[in-house]
Length: 352
Image 1 (cartoon, rainbow, N blue to C red):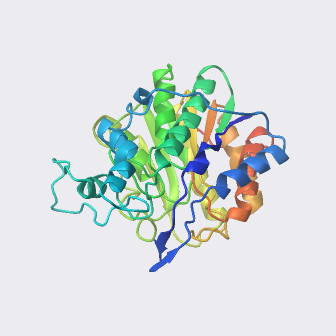
Image 2 (cartoon, rainbow, N blue to C red; image 1 turned 135 degrees about the vertical axis):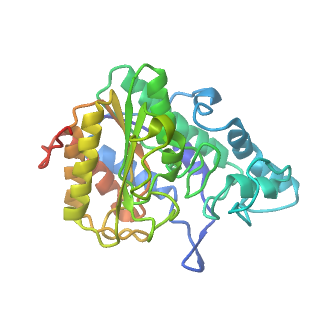
């Protein structure tokens, strides 16, 4: 399995974030990608390649031009206003506020497009964000050209970014961009399997009314866990997309027995869908010692996850998402990938 990687990810470094009422160093940091890359090389997964550069039109297939333009220019406007540091919203849209008008001023647009204060925009953030999307697009192009599997080592991550909003450390939705690329390249049906601890609210929003992209997500229950306001079981799609959105929320303290049961359900749904290609939003923050998560998976479970995904027998693109137990992130991510490449699944999904 080849890995697509760009050192441009270093160009986004958050100055910090608010967590449990305190300002702390950012959990999402460049070291994450470097440790994954080191482990990929250590286990001999395969060649590491640099991404191609794709036009913005590949991104605006799923994101509004307004969001893309905003992300490109927000920090320069911030500085032009005499400000220092990173650009971040001080307020957010909520019930009763207008959604049909985008404010002209920068602070209003930060409130319109951003939904939390943990995703600051620095001077070089856009370069890192665009490169991360290119990493995903390159992986999708390789799958379209016949590769059986590819690992897109994306950073910043993406699954919280919606068509017209960003947040949750995510600016552009790499998995959604890759899925759309696969569709545009000829795949009739694409399935996205999100195994990150947090719900992929952005991915759900992008494809919620579509039947050509199935979204399946295992995640912390929104009654307890970020992003809180999306990811419930009764969200099954709308319009043509009814039946093509499957949320499998799980409570704090879920161990392998509970988590693997949900995975089996999700894989069975994907098998029944008969997708031409699969995109996996690969978050490994389900690990027992992740500092901002509450599941109890062990190192060995990640190998089993990879093997179970492989049992679907479909071309598969892995797109890196979360995982904040930094010392362990490389082990867990690589275990999924080597498990996919080699081991057998103990509970193969059956079409329903």
